[in-house]
Length: 318
Ligand SMILES: [Zn+2]
Ligand SMILES: [Zn+2]
Image (cartoon, rainbow, N blue to C red; front, side):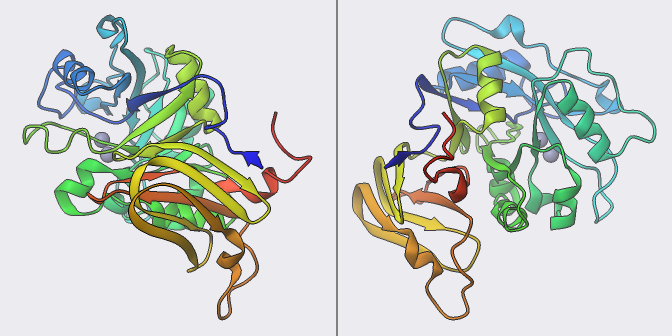
């Protein structure tokens, strides 16, 4: 059995939200009110991701003074530059920016801006692909990305375009090794309707912002709307998962096939990955898989993609 990261790593899971706005850009609440709301909701960390444009005077929110015992913040922003294939501005989550990150250059494109942020040390996430109507070519053009925002709660609530898996799954099929992350993108214009709906559980020894960022960039986290994943192990074609009680546990790869177990309050399942390659005209085993669990309320948690060649004996990251 190979125990899959991040579940097998030492440390603890810290719950955080990487995408939310305050009055420093177009959110309704002041920064301290936003931070207080997340702290009261049981989060361990969060990031104000203000719209990094001249209209708001290029904000990189300095939230260091809002850190307290048991709650920390990451410094970052939501970056914008021309232009996606539908002719709009890019929206790129950059977690871990220096406070003096320079405004965009006049001719700087989205991919160039993302590269500059990555060079400055940031975790780069392609925001709300469905809301932005991003194509797969758009996704690949952000070649410094660490992850795709596969669930954006604000977009889900506002216009049913919260799910970004379509983009990540196709990029994985093209061999691009990216991770997935869920966020709120809360603005609090309608009370907290767009808050506390999607987050990440980051595995790290401490909730130090630098430790959290290192873990994020390494993919040592998973995404959730509520359920918790405790462990994932793989031996040959057998995948074993342990989690909080859910009604559906399923695995997909790069084709239409899936393998699932359903029932009431399942907290463990063993799934046969060989069945992902069965069916009419299904090409051989998918090089990557990912696990989704869904509880009785319809809330999901998702692992990051697991590349099977990385867990074969002799090829396991220590
Ligand atoms: Zn956005
Ligand atoms: Zn946003």
